[in-house]
Length: 204
Image (cartoon, rainbow, N blue to C red; front, side, top):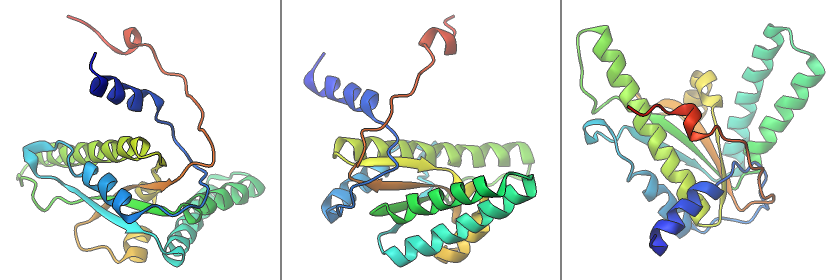
């Protein structure tokens, strides 16, 4: 196995979801490399449906976090969850976003995707775009780890699309899919159990 191959496998195997950061700023050139790595992902028809909004200003992160937190609070109250636990979870969610040096909101655009008259192919085309954004996000996470950064993918924008659009004044057609918090780790991150290959694969 070559050194480059070994390094790639190590990055994949050692990456962890990091939710706490030491507060150090990320150099702009480092952030640029990580974002450019995201844009090198494969996509259906090479249409590159990913779009990114990068937040570094505290007031922007706080405004977004508060909007997401309020929606989480209302959803959980409607579910009948314990109010005390709700407030604890909302506070934790807000802190994760506001304390991250950089927040990247991953969005999807159907602008360049194919257009079909029937629902079956419309749905397939949308899923293709979701897959492309997901692969771009994985590139970003791996590049961040290679740069010594910690990162975590959060799915909150899927539940709060209108709030994200309003807070960030997203262009028409930018569909929020998730957000990634980025920074230098204040913790090592926990190794999570993985299902063995034989459990999740079938060979024919």
